[in-house]
Length: 420
Ligand code: 2M8
Image 1 (cartoon, rainbow, N blue to C red):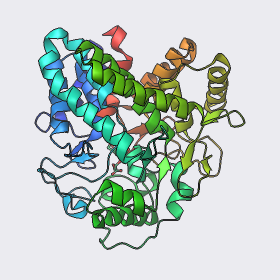
Image 2 (image 1 turned 180 degrees about the vertical axis):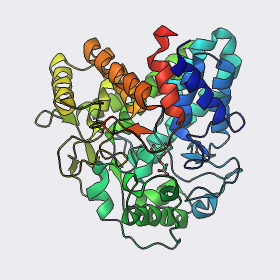
Image 3 (image 1 turned 90 degrees about the vertical axis):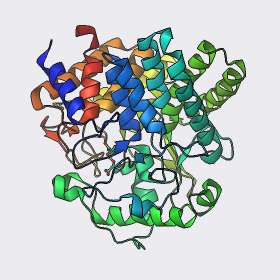
Image 4 (image 1 turned 90 degrees about the horizontal axis):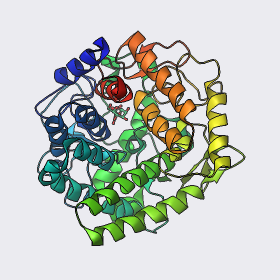
């Protein structure tokens, strides 16, 4: 077996905390939502029992209203801020109060297919949890039925520190009720992390929503940050397609209709966010009503869940190639060279294996297998050269952030699956 695959499996073992996998030791010592979904797809390649377990442990944190939180605090740890006492949520086990990109149903379908039909008994409760979560997205985060779901905190995007939030986040006050005692900068170089001012705003939002008792309607009314987001909606739509497929497999015809209606709504809404002048899709800032024009990877993610016209897909691929020109590792999370581009600061420029994974699937879906293969090669080469880092500096190729990173390990196995 390829030595890197052996190493990837070793990382997943080292990051196992009892049926769930932490993203990396110390920097992120709990179960994270979308990290676990990617990890489950990695496990699906060689241990479907463990893959199911990852998802089962994640839904232990699902709230009664259907939300699956972004962090599940299964066990205490003092190496991370903000911990459970900052979130002040009321679930049976401690969790954060916000969510993350809904990769869950994409993972569930892959795990179910890898396990074969015998896995149906195990897949059903997970399917129910996913459906409940999708209903939550469309009610709590799109109460007006636009088809685009909104984020109330940058961390919900998974692309926490992206330039996409700069304008919307600048309106959020830096005052906090909670003292901000950062731990992240004790683990990795501060120049790779968000600034103190950003952290104050992140925590101001947490205080605001905790004061709403985490009630979705109250939060919607009070939110000083509200962005109808294109990357999240595109992931939700792909997950919705996979959920619809599972509903058919499981003979749930009423669910099929309901899910298909969600999907159709989002499909149309995403398409309406195409901006030919930018050759990208854009999010919408619901506080100002403006397009979010910041040049980030999010604008290309709709490739994953739409069957685009040839012209649109071609324009996206041309734009992606223009951004990738001269880089050692693609795909950058911010357009190189613009003022907000910082190749080492997380989500403001670096390349991430999991984003590449989504883009690779999207490029294949839209008839660009060569571009997909270039991106796949760039990703696996970066990992083989530098190890399983959290992300990579696109200019130098250097592995940055946390090391021994679970989703990078899962992505590597997935991108190498034909050579297993
Ligand atoms: C990063 O986010 C966390 C907060 O959720 C942090 O910086 O403390 C992001 O990269 C996020 O997408 C990821 O899920 C998490 C764990 O890998 O780390």
